[in-house]
Length: 197
Image 1: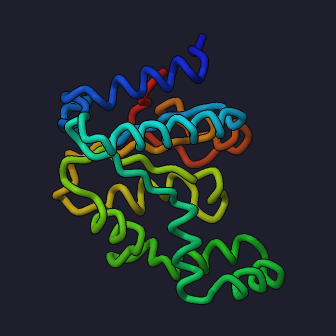
Image 2 (image 1 turned 30 degrees about the vertical axis):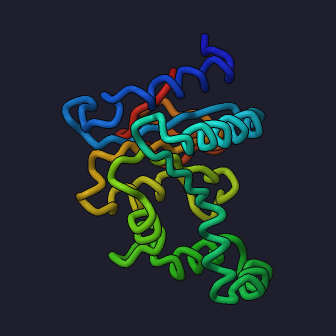
């Protein structure tokens, strides 16, 4: 039986503060990518804990810098900077959510070497960091977890290979399957580890 969300969040805090967590020593020396999955109804509890951890980390006693990137906020900021919001509303109304998803991913250059989310995270993340990626539930279905792994994390510059990156996932991750909101199976995924069981 899984521990309650408060217990799991406390375990997560202890894990990220271990020096060994910030070294590339995963199973078979693989990438340092993690998933903290949680019941969708625990979203506000998770957000509050992340905010508390960020505030504590600002005091500088952790030995690393906690960087929190809300993927939804980054996506919206980009669309607003290009004055694309009205176009997005019209696109969804006229052509549907799938075409809107394609258009947004195109403007973010998700499939290009110039991926704007990768560029932003790389430019704003120091080497001695732990990265939290949040907002994937708010992004769904415009940006889904497999795309976060395959198009963002796996395209990070080599200099960030040892930086632990944790995706906060409102749903279930079994290390074989992603189920957003515990309702919609996404693509199978195997190259990230569950942070807390």
